[in-house]
Image (cartoon, rainbow, N blue to C red; front, side, top):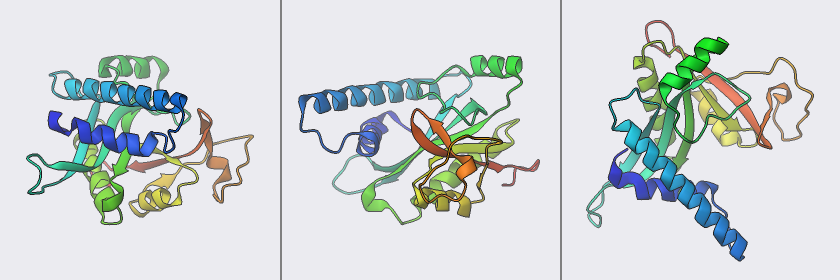
Length: 214
């Protein structure tokens, strides 16, 4: 991610997470607030990525060069961050110093590993293999990270296309040991549903062997 990518990245996030129907003033204010939050968060990640501190987040982008634009256009993105392995929590959007995370993990005995998030592709460039390329790139980063033994992610329990993508690349759905919930979403792994902030999610992971192979 480079500074000139920021506008395109914010647009990708807003297309995915923003409200599609913004007819009321309240909807427009919600959209404005979300865009401000996304942009400020991405600026924080960009600043940390350029700092000498241990990186908490890395954002990778896929770009398209056109003769009509002076700079490449971002058509896809993915984030990889280093987080405590807590399947029932979504990694924080705001970057937290890696030293604090390591301290937390030492105190609680929780491992810290690579987490994938915000895999977003421009709708006009989907089904061209970009998502797989971006996931593979994050796996390459993770395999080079000292002490990293696995990659983790959450996936919408009702988004079967994303589930198929990750499973085709060797990610496995990790069931919960026990859950009181049932879920009528056409998902076979009903004991694997995590309800996080009211959203039904699956937790997937992929291990890296000692030689860095997936």
